[in-house]
Length: 173
Image 1 (cartoon, rainbow, N blue to C red):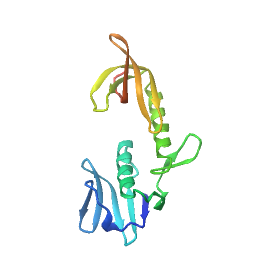
Image 2 (image 1 turned 180 degrees about the vertical axis):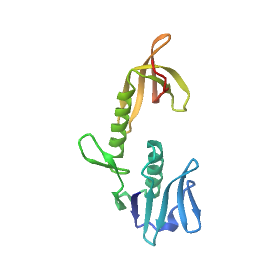
Image 3 (image 1 turned 90 degrees about the vertical axis):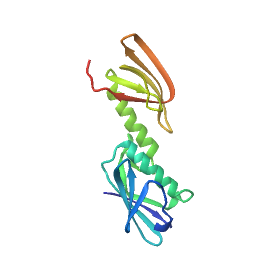
Image 4 (image 1 turned 120 degrees about the vertical axis):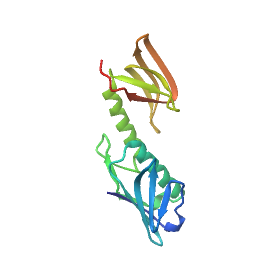
């Protein structure tokens, strides 16, 4: 389990529509899965986090923690919440270096998808097109794909948008 603590926050002040209380146990729910449990004292809240979450679930949890600690980010202890390493070898955590770590992972994912059959989706999850991934453009902080070029049955097509998702179709050419 990964552990993250918010100091100076009593458990009674933890409120979110995504946090469910059952007896004395608090749980963070994403979809129908418990992604973290919360323990608390008078002056500290401790998140026990499932280390096998996908990137979207980590982002979801991070958003909740940032909301709960708004204005008090310095009181977050995430020494026991290391998620991985950045390209330069620096440690990456759920709060510290999150954007850099997410960008590092997404760039690696995109490199593996080059030349593969993919779908390009808009921010609402609607398909823009599908085909072989030829190229893409990204921005960082936060990481976003702003355009991609696919080789389709009808030739090369470029799709642009504020936040394009590229997902593999699991079909091989």
